[in-house]
Image (cartoon, rainbow, N blue to C red; front, top):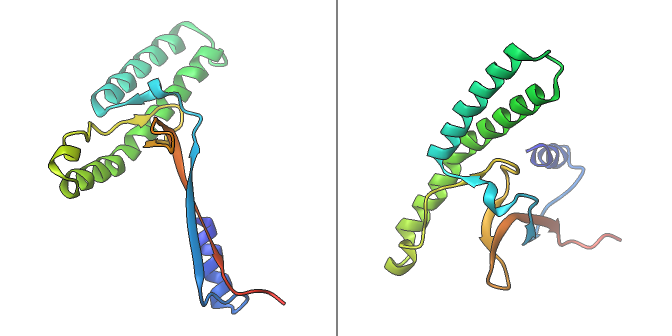
Length: 145
């Protein structure tokens, strides 16, 4: 978002000119473990459990105790995963609507990682599915003199 805003300002101020843009992308392996992806039901259960554990920990331990911070960190990561879940569900619905009957049957429940919420499970060049980022980049095709 920041990069897009910066490009818009540069264009408006005539610092750069974009007459022709080339765009490409690639998939980059994410740091999320495959087992960290959870569906909505599991995420909500995990959030409830982390809240219960956090309250129990705070009651029995000093506030600076590392487990309390870990419980809060886990709860924050689960909340972020829940915030991103609607986006993933929308993509799944789009795939179901626009895929053939055979491919639509393969679309599974929307899941988001609790360790790396921006990573998505994608098919890689070798045919395997891994947590991945779809990195895209663009450049002006004009040559500088």
